[in-house]
Length: 91
View 1 (spheres, rainbow, N blue to C red):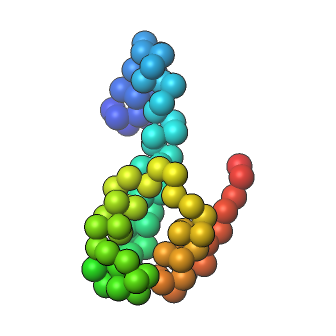
View 2 (tube, rainbow, N blue to C red; view 1 turned 180 degrees about the vertical axis):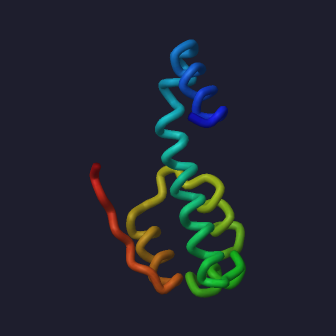
């Protein structure tokens, strides 16, 4: 187990408020990171992706850095603009 994973596990045991919001916040963070990685793999800047989506660069930044409450329709549009397909799983 990495030092970070150990720290998170220990902190969750000791701090109920940290544990309560951590998993949801982490999932939102992962969505933003996945979108940024897909954009970079497509060789696009935030500005180029924004142009494809007919939006502003700040909107792309907000999605990548604060992906909470992002609509599925928005995720589909981003995926399509990146030449990707959106897949949703319930695990």
